[in-house]
Image (cartoon, rainbow, N blue to C red):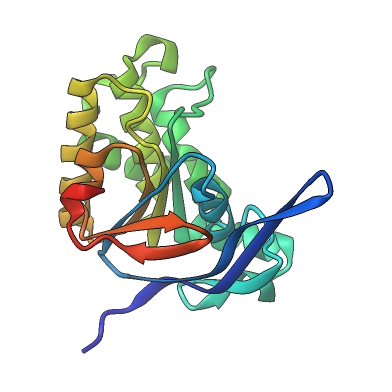
Length: 233
């Protein structure tokens, strides 16, 4: 049986106005991501990688084409419906963790569950489980300022995974970490993919991280193309 497609974009187009010129950064991009698949997207600075990620997440609007998450099109939803679907089906991890400074690790990870309507006690149980899974069981009550850079990124990853989304979108998840912490995050992502069967789409300049994924694609001239040898990402 063919694996379920959890994320798909069809003929995605995005342009920006630069003075009198129109810069088309995405020119008919096509992508399918299956459940449990890990996909790395690489490319030169300014090639449109973060733009693509924002479109996949329904955070920006294309000029053409469509994006489907777990079988539903962003274009078919009103904003409130889109926000609820995003909360259920997608996780986001960025280069900077974007944790709420006044809340503990546990409270930060509870947020998506509370937004989804879970009661506080149930949300705390699920948040505790995922924080323990990323190795932060002893740090539940610590606020971001009390955590190391690697620990803060693990909290951000736990927050992205707590709703058990269909797919997690990552923008330079190791870009703000030293080599040791970056390696630990790579190992953590591999383990979470194996244990939870989640799909990952990550934009990265980290060739070692890209090479560990199931597929490596390069974004150039507005198109996604496969990299035959992931070691060359």
